[in-house]
Length: 636
Image (cartoon, rainbow, N blue to C red; front, side, top):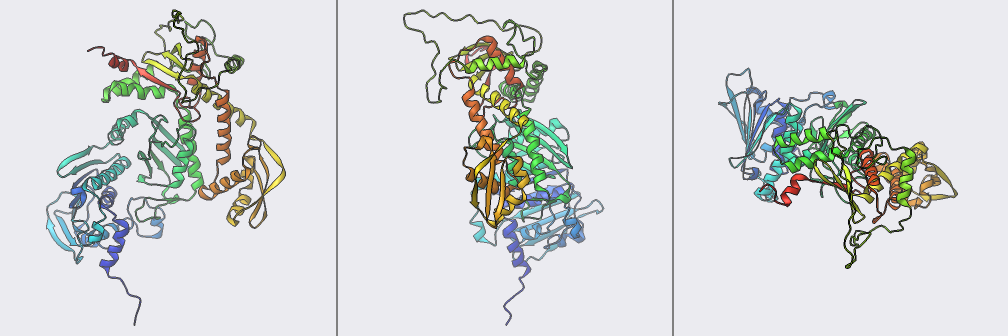
């Protein structure tokens, strides 16, 4: 008696459906991808009851001929690949040939299509019970319409796992959002229960693309986004990354596409997280819409049935390219980039206002930073800065900031106190502050200082309104960035251990330490393999001589296992530099003169990542004139 049996086509398709069709959104994803592969310029989607009752996808693509309609519903039938070479360089979104067969096995499916060569369309219908395809003539323009009704009608156990109509429609909407972000050349329409929810026209220009992203991801995102476009070593990365100040409490606004296919990949996530490492506050997540273009032969998309995961042939190369591109883009962000978002949000959400804000801020900040370090330190503080702040003057200034005061840094829990409290019996005599220069020329992005508030904040005036600067946080970032540059110039020095540290590790970890020996030594870490499962640490970075060496090495080896590389030493080193910069920064209640305040503002404009301190907190904010007018009801 035979124990092994061949599964029936119906049962095999239902097993496959368990992998491909999780919920209505899975059906929509497969159908929209087929439409995009067919070259559709417009895709209309109608759903009812969250997609459980009906999902209809109509496109104006190339269509399917009458003879191929029944075959299209068969398992492992596709027009997208025909050989192993095609599979190893897939350029289409779909290629498995399982989607329609899997969907039809758990629903009532009707497919109507017509090619340009045909005079009339044809329709094929199939139900999950018997899987017998019924072919008939139909009326339809060039293109294809797929109707999926009564999803999971024959698998009630699966239907019980579906959520409420609102929840399922939310997943459907998110699915279409991803496809619309991945294909700007295609128009999309989404209707739910006969009501239009989303209508997107094709977006051929950069402005049209930004409008689509604003409609799908929110106008605040595009107002606070930096455009990037970098190309090297056969890779191209372009798209939009949000400023660190526009961070999220959860990773719900992160879209990454590889050759127009939306993916979720640990390697990519690690590269992005590393690029944002010292500009994000605790447990915050960056927002981005990014597109990576690579040779299809260098990426394997045949990793998971849902095709959400990919495997790069040279993952380390891709990781480094993404990290360095984003790291440079974030480092190049200057105060005028932040101002564009702030002014645009203040003026309103209409396109004209946003474009007007961008133009105005660009005009005002056009020649703000002509030298690496421009300062108002010299000359009368009633005039714009006229000369470059020399390195010796900078050193003297920061030495003066760090001297004397003897006032401990104010913790976040302490109340703000004025450096010179006024007694009850003494009349207040305020210091007369100079009027900022009134010139028709260009103005620095952070404007000119006019006062100091409670010895903690610097108040500066710009044409847009008032800038408030946390002087300790700003000085901390400036000091931190200078310390990193100085460290890079001198390279990372190492110190031999008087007694080498012997560690028991796994064979895999020992092999990694041996194979990455040269790389680890460049980071100041000398590790030798002295046994199958034993390594000896002989040198450590000088800056980290007091750190927990064993834990540091284990963390480095864990990074090598997971990501193929480690930035642990750099991260710990920068953390130490950040602590030193924090202790060396100007303290609260340190009274600054107007030239000193302006010197700090000019340095902020010339320093990388000056919008955040070392811990990710903002260093300054803008209160626009329109916001002040609203507070005081002016113009009403």
